[in-house]
Amino acid sequence: MTRAAVPGLPSRHPIGGLLPALYADDDLAQRFTAGLDTVLAPVLSTLDNLPAYFDPALTPPDFLRWLSSWLGVDLDPGWPEELSRTVVVRAMELHRWRGTRHGLAERLRLCLGVEAEIVDGGGAAWSATPGSELPGAPTGELLVRVWPLRTAAVDARQVLDVVRACCPAHLTCRVEILTGPPGPPEDGGS
Image (tube, rainbow, N blue to C red; front, side, top):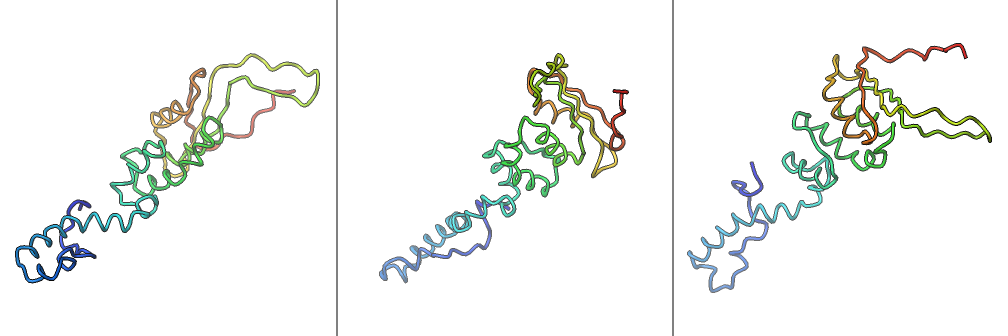
C-alpha cells in the first residue's frame, strides 16, 4: 500500500458538498469533484498525520529510511525494522559520542549485538603530577576486541566495517573476535 492511492479512503472534506447550491444536483460536477476527492484524500490524510511521520516509533516503514537520512544515519537493509527504529531514535546520542571509545562501543552494541573492549593507540595522555614522564610513542593502531551478546557468532566483516567508519583516519584498525569477555589484565610484575 502506498500513500498515493488508498482504495476506499473517504475524504474528510468532500469538495462536492462545498460547491454552490447550483451544482448540488449537477451529476457531472458531483462526479468530477468525487474524482478529485479520491486523489486528494491521501494527501489530506498525510497532512493530518504529519507529526507521526517525524516520530521514529510511529512513522511508516517505507518512510523510516528517508527520516534516517535527515539524521545522517545509514540503515542496513538487513536489519529488522525495530532495530532500524531504535538506531534512528538514538542517532543524536550516538552523534554526540562519535569519535570516542564509548561511542564506538555503543554503536557496536546497538547495531551488531556485541560487547567491545577498545584499546586506543592515539597517544594522548595527561598527568596530575608535575614533572612526570612523557607518554611513550603512539602505536597508531586502534584495537577492538568484541564478543557476542545477542547472537552466538560475530561477523568480523560487519564489525570491521563499523569500526572503520568510526575510526580516525590516522589510525589503523584491528579487530579481534573473542568467545567471551576478556579476563582481567595480567600484571606484568610492576
